[in-house]
Amino acid sequence: MSEKEDKTIDKLSGVETTGHVWDGIEELNNPLPRWWLWTFYLTIIWGIGYTIAYPAWPMISGATEGVLGWSTRADVAAEIEQHEARNEGLVEQLLAVDMAALTEDPDLNRYATSRGAAVFRAQCSQCHGSGAAGAEGYPNLLDDDWLWGGSMVEIADTVRYGVRNTTDDLARYSEMPAFGDFLEDTEIDAVVEYVVSLSSADFDTDLATAGQSVYLDNCSACHGDQASGDRDIGAPNLKDAIWLYGGERDDIRETVVNARFGVMPAWGQRLSEADVRAVSAYVHQLGGGE
Picture 1 (cartoon, rainbow, N blue to C red):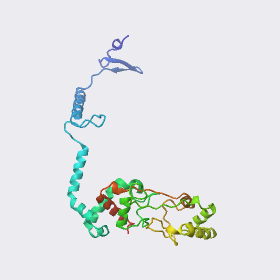
Picture 2: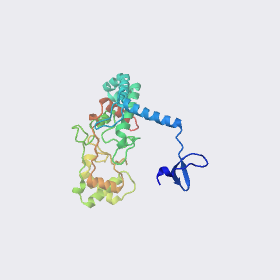
Picture 3: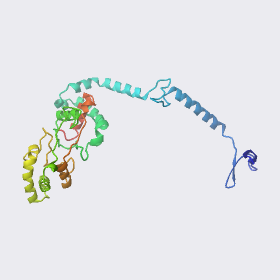
């Protein structure tokens, strides 16, 4: 029997059934409400009009532009242009000011740090964290521990040229030898214990004493006889208990044996000079700037 022949008239409602039955319940073939149908037809018409008027259909190299020529990118570009125009005078001042004297102009400094905060969130927070507290291998920018100096000018140079990258000849560059290649295990154990003793009261005195000799022979040339580091060559202070890669014995041993070689991009090649100066001002005022 065909589906059409299965259809019957429901005795209670007098409405034809569709022939579909679930658990003894027959489906009535009620027509859709007229208002619903007209609303549905109008949405189809509106959708077709929208795809004609606005960018809609994906193509091979882009999307259809739409007869109105509307573009979110163009709107954003126009807003950025208006913003830059309103702040053109401040940008010119920021480019001309001596960075060391930036804080002497409250209005300019406020603009620089606000702009720098936006740059930091977009470009720097992925490594240094949204709050700039850093992570293992990525410096904390809130403290007062700086490998290359924490003045406004020094921070700007670090941002501008980067660290140990291969794209900028002026990049900050230092390289610690992998002492595991030429020190004995006993010497490494000793020098690790000596480094631990510089910032902790929990150490083996005899082993640390032996490690001091190893340190003076192999490490003091960069970190100094007093282990206070050297910012001119990016050698960290070993006495302040601030560790970029961890301060446990295993962490320090890994650093001594295999060395570390963190890289920071040269942001001067990616950002405008105004943005470099602004983000440097922002980092400087976070709490650790000198």
